[in-house]
Structure formats: structure tokens, C-alpha cells
Image 1 (cartoon, helix red, strand yellow):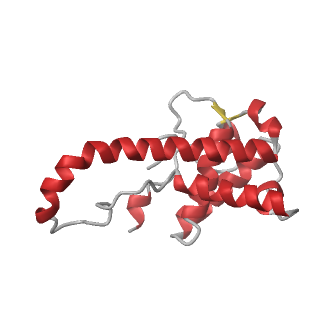
Image 2: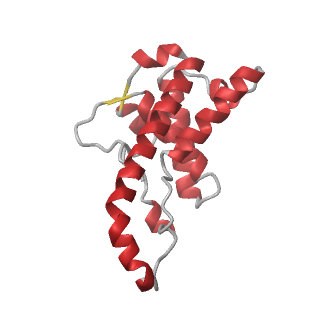
Length: 160
């Protein structure tokens, strides 16, 4: 679940939230099909460069406090893509659970939205601890195109 993935729909600026999306997706798809893995890895690198952030700020190791911030940042960014849902792994044959699912599905949707929002705030806070100037920086979608990337990410559903 990633409602913030920028698409070419008039959005012209990418910012720290887009960097959070790219970091989370890079981590989530690190062992996936090369198309997904490479797209998100490149997008992350391009956004870091365009926003003036050395990738070592997130990936490097400098000290205990920074390592803790980086770990929480990575976990929170990845968590924005994977809200908890005990019904998420059930593809079929769950008729016995259908009454329970119907009773709680709205609550699960609300929980997922809150989960994503809270983890996005945590990731943003960690990024700004590591690099406060990111709050004011943006870049154009054109930087993705210039790097050979489409602004719309590949659909993970095509790679199963």
C-alpha cells in the first residue's frame, strides 16, 4: 500500500516524502524481480542526489545514535508499505472467516491508514534529524526522466 507514489499527473515536485517512499520500496523490493529492485534502487539514488543527500547519511555508519536513527528510519519507511492485516495472506477458501472480515474490514482500513501515517511521520522525523535541510528541498519529476526512469513505478502485481 503506497498511495503517495508520484505519477505524472501534474505533480511537479518531489520531496522528502517521495524519498521516504523510495527508501521503503527499495528495502521492500531488494530481493524481488530485477525490474522492481533496480527501479526502486535507482529512484532512491536519483532522489538522494537531486535532494542533495549523500546516501551514506542513510546507509552509512557513523555512530551509535545515528545508527539507531537509521534503523528506525529504515523500519518506518518500509512499514509504510506493509500495514498489518491478518487477512492479507488469505487468497481463497476463507469463507469461514468472511463474517469476521466483514465485521472488521472498515476498522482494518482505518488501522492501515493510521499505521502508514504514523510510520511516515517517524521516517520523516528521522530523515530530518539526519539531514534537516531536506525539509526545504524539492526536485522536479524531470530528474527521474533524465535518469531514464518513468515517474510511474512498475506495478509489483505484474511480477508474481
